[in-house]
View 1 (cartoon, rainbow, N blue to C red):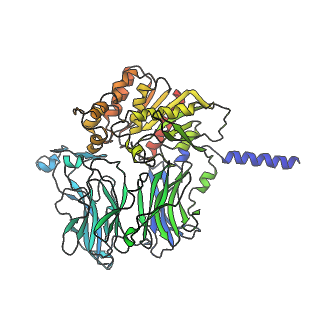
View 2 (cartoon, one colour):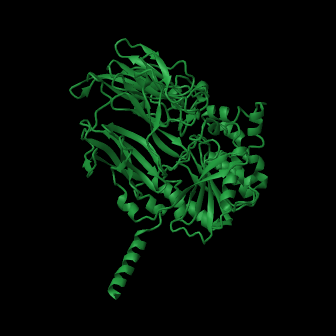
View 3 (cartoon, one colour):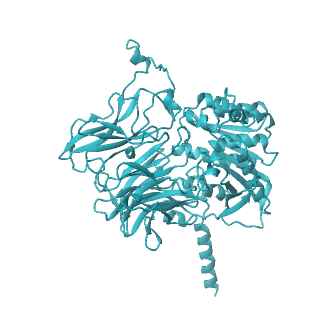
Length: 636
C-alpha cells in the first residue's frame, strides 16, 4: 500500500514538474512551422521549421515533407526539388524572377561623382522613406527570361524605366507576379504612382503583360483601392482580393473573380461580416477557399465560382471553434491542408476532411515542448458598451487559475487600428506568456476590428480617441467586477495603435490603472502626421492634415491627441521605441518619455535602435520580454 501511495505521489510530482509555466526563454525555444506547398506528385506537404538560435541571434531553418494522409515527417535537403516551380511557364520556355533596378539618382555621390565619400541624399518629393528603409532610387522589377535545360538566359525587364515596384514594398513577394496558365501572359501587382502621389494612395492594380507583343494592360483600372494577390485556376480564371476606396487601407477586403475573362464579380460583397485575409482556388477550379475573421477567430470558408452557373455566390463556413486558420496550403481530393494556431499553441499544419468537417493534426513539431507547458484557459465574454452594443472580450487566465484568489490584471490594447483580435499566437505579444506570469489578460474586440460587420470595423476611423476608449474602459470595468480581479493592480499595455491607446488612456483613466506600457505608440498626432511615411493612413483615419479645418481633423489633433492630456499623467509608464520605425517614427516615443520624466513620473525608455515597427531579432526580443515583465513586477 505504501509502495502504491509512493508511486502515486511520485507520479503526481512528475506531472506537476512536467507542467511548467511558459517563460520568455521557453517561448524562444518554440520551433516555427511554415508551409511551403504541396509536392509535385501531390503526395506530400512540404514545410519548413525555423528554430531560434539565441546565441547567434538568428533562426536556423530546415525543410521537411509529410504525407498528405498523415504519418512521419521526413527531413529533406535544401537542394531537393520537391515543389513544382511556379516561376516557369506552363510550356517550360520561360522563367520569371524579380530584381532591383536603378532608376533614379538620389545619393550625393551619384549626383556628384567627384564627392565619392558623401552620404547625402537629395529628394524632391515624398515617399523618401518607407517602413524602415530610405528610398535609394532602386525599384523591384519583374523579368522574364528564356529557359531551357534547367538554365536561363539574360532576362527582359517587363517594366523598363518605370519608377514603380513589383513586388510591392515593403512586404510583397513572389505572389505579386504570376504566370497565366497559357504561358503567354504574366500578371503582376504594382502601384504605378510616384513620389508624393505614392505616399497618399493605396491604389495598387493588376497588370497583364503579353510576352509575345510586349503590351501591358491594366486589368483593374476601374477600381481605385487595393488590388492584391492574383491567382489563376487551371482554366485561366483570375481571382484576387480587392478594396474599393483609395486611401483607406482597412476597407472591406473582398474576393473577386474575372468571369469569362471579361467582367469582375465580387464573391463576398453580400456578406457584411466577411473581410477576406487570404484565399486559394479549389482543386477543380469550381470554388475558392478563403480565411477571414469572424467573431474573434479566423475561420475557413468556401465560396462557389458563379462563372460556371447562374447562381449567386454562396458562402459556406467550414470550420468553427476557438482557434485561428492562418493559411491554406493545398486541397487534395476531399482534404484541405491548413495552418492553425490558438492562444496556447504556435502554428501547426492540419488536414480538414471536407466531407465530415473533421480536423486532424498533420505536423507535431512542438508536441513534446507543449506537453511540458501549462495551458491557459481562454474565455469569451460579451460586454455591454456605453452606446448600447455588445462587445466580444477575450479573457485569458493564468495556469492553475483559482477563483478564490485575486490576480493582477492587464488590459491589452490591439494595434492596427483595424486588425482582428483573434486566437493568434505571437512571439512578442503572447497572451499565454503574459498569463503564465500570473496576470489575467483582458483583450477586447473593440471598435475597429473586422469580423463583426463593416459598421463596427469602420467606426474607429476619424474617431481614434473617442468611442474606442469607452470600449476599453467598459471591458476592464466589466471584468474588474469579478472577485478574483485585484482592482488595485490593473495595468494597460499595447503597441502601435494600441500604444496610442495606452498614451490616451494614461490621461483619461481616472486612476483605474497602476501602470502602463506603450510600444511604438502615437503620442502626438501632429508630429505623427508630419513624419509618418504612409500618408494615406493619416489622411483617411485622422480626417486630413492638422492644418485642415474640418471637424474630424480638429478632433484628431485636439481632444483626441494624447499629448493634449499629458498634464493629467500620474501613473508609471514604460515606453518602447524602434529606431528605424518610419511608420510611427522615433520622436513619438522620445516625446512621451521626456514628458513623463519632466513631470517626475516613474518611467522607463526601452530604445531599440536597429528595430522597425516590430522586434525581429531573438536577443532584442528577449530583452523586450524581460524588461516588459520586470516593469510589471516593479509597478504592479
